[in-house]
Length: 214
Image (cartoon, rainbow, N blue to C red; front, side, top):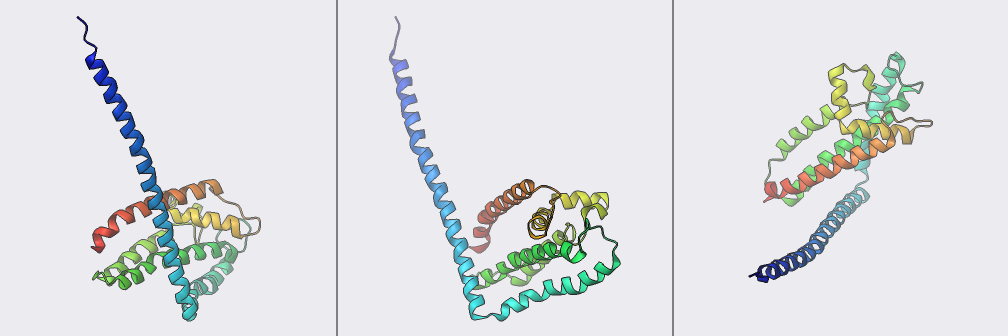
């Protein structure tokens, strides 16, 4: 004698499971949208705070411009006279300017985190963070194409430079900033690499920061 009850129960179970999944997916999408919206809002909040600080204290613009100016006026002027660095027919100062701009953005992005930590009064040792910032920024800067082409580097350093996201930022800036600028990696590759790296670092930072802060 054939029993059909188990089949009916199975169909009911499949129906319930499918319904539950249908309810779960919109919730996950809604949660993802809220997370992205929160990230964007917090980002613009920080941007607004920094803009107000600069409006009330314009001298900060001068202090932030000193280091890039020294790189261009001293380092750049000296090496432009050497004429030993291949720049694709461009003046060395033109070649160097996008790299120094990328360096300035990198330094400000990393060290502005110190002010956020102070403002939240988390009780973190701010000096240790400064040391970590130096450890990150200097290798990223010098192991990139910011101040010299990658072809001048030894093979092992070329590999590191090609894995360095700053190289792709500088490459894109040279293409976009300079007249007849050419991207060595391709603008599409530059933007994809920077987008992926930024996304990964934001996710890692979002997961790790609450553990450090609380």
